[in-house]
Length: 274
Image (cartoon, rainbow, N blue to C red; front, top):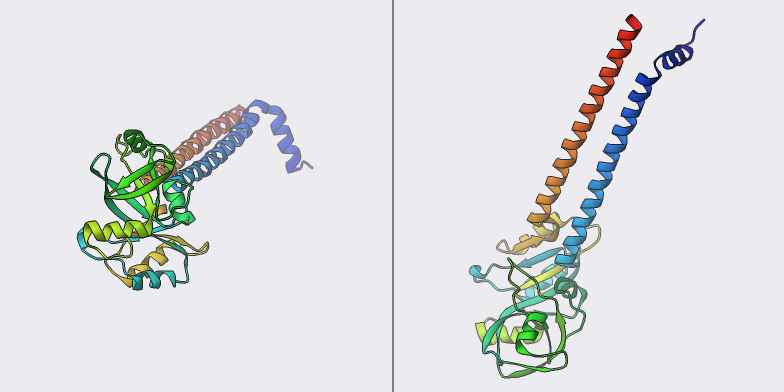
């Protein structure tokens, strides 16, 4: 009595090319789809790495818009620090400080000496009340090098490091980086503000849900502006485009493979009929 296995072997011997090409088509389709999935994972990892290079180790940026006329207070800072999902908080003060050599105000960032601002603004040196960091383009314009003195509104600072120019829309904006305490004094002097910071860099705990944490912080003050690094619009658009591309390409591979297999079996049935 003939077995199913015996019939399958006889069918394979009688139609080796048709069945082999069908098996090869299925295997090729599976490999292509797996390759595209791996490509998608690698592309997502690359986008996340670029995101980390842009925003550093921070997960959230929290502050008020300029037109809101509201300031970050010690009470708000303490509320956020005491949140169980917050791992670390770093204060940042933004102002414009006049450089005496060129008599022009320069965009100035005041930071604390921890890894969040260092990873965000890409510098390594810690800053005290008399040290300063600037971008290379500004250092070239001022004809200063590391170790030289720079005068800002009558105060003297030592340049301890230069960072790469950050291009924005084809223009490299000049930037000064100083200790947050000093920048806060310039904010009070230039803007008359007693704010503890302009905005805060926040690192969440590893298992924290960023959207949930954002909602909790929003509960402290509904006017807070909260930016989530992972929700960067450019990254989200790139990820969405990548997912769409992989899905469409996978569907095309499946359709072509299915048509090829159907064609092969139609040919097989035709041969068996005649």
